[in-house]
Image (cartoon, rainbow, N blue to C red; front, side, top):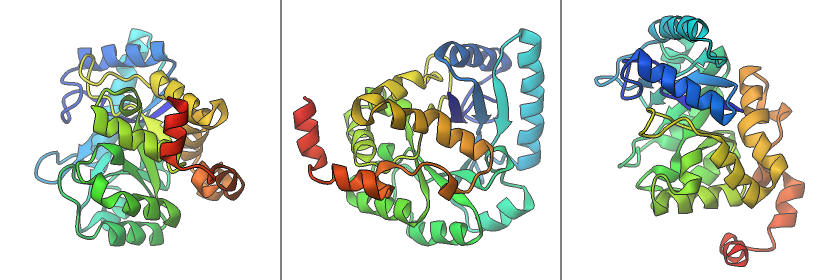
Length: 268
């Protein structure tokens, strides 16, 4: 499996506080079946002023430490990027790193307040040639009022990333509800851990894959944690990767006969 959202770098944001924690998290990830991890610290002006060059150096240093410790986890760079007015310029200049220097990057909306120009921001990013991967929409407090916004953004070309732990209840019932709904309705492109530590939000992805298998089957679950993440690392155009079920006309037409709630009750 490939984890494209993990706060593994030591002492750079609210993730791993030190090298020992980073190494322990890496061991957990490997034991869980994760072969590669994108180190994605926050870039949040005024709070986490990380930059592309600094993140790149930190990834190289941690890669060396993993090699010395004999931990077989491949690392690459990225960032968990908060919305900012100069985001396109930052991406083009390299101040904001994309995932593995690809066209894809993690875009984190505010947790408690819907941004006023989210759709316009995403469309500007798409027009500039980037694919924003919107992180953990299921955990946002305002998703109930703006669920259709995320559906429309996915239709327009943005990707949606659900946290694996949301599907197992690690983030509460609301996050599980919205995560399962997004997943079952076929809008989710990837699962990731969004891990921040050893005990608090550990890097466990297999549990999310198993949950996805129950909703969508083994093939689509593999797309969520292997095929599409590998496509990101290979910088493939989205059109060259398998579309999520809702964006796959043949699959969607078969599934559209029953609503999500009907399938939920049937499953229970």
